[in-house]
Image 1: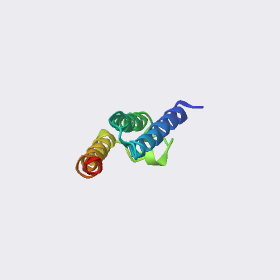
Image 2 (image 1 turned 90 degrees about the horizontal axis):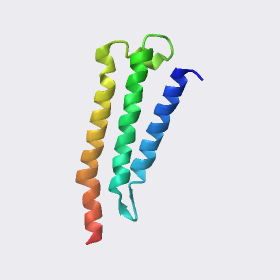
Image 3 (image 1 turned 90 degrees about the vertical axis):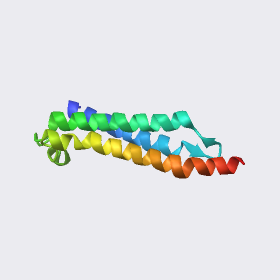
Image 4 (image 1 turned 135 degrees about the horizontal axis):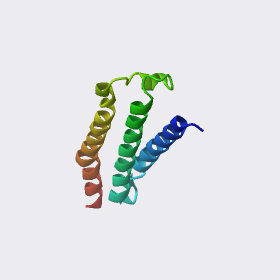
Length: 106
């Protein structure tokens, strides 16, 4: 397996873990803060790996998607998107999801 494939697989695993942890952070037993934190952490790691892939392989015909990120400015969009996704998710959880759990406890 090439380094590209290994990094890509690792990024994919972390993103799948992010989705799983995010959706299992909330349930009948309540809001799980640590699991929710790990969901964000896995998103940041997946974004970091995607950024590393873009830095190392953009413009080298390894991936048509990565070739789009062929300049440093475009590559910086990756961590920017991760930050925006993380902030958006945190805002939704803070203002919509957590109040729901607080109402159910009363």
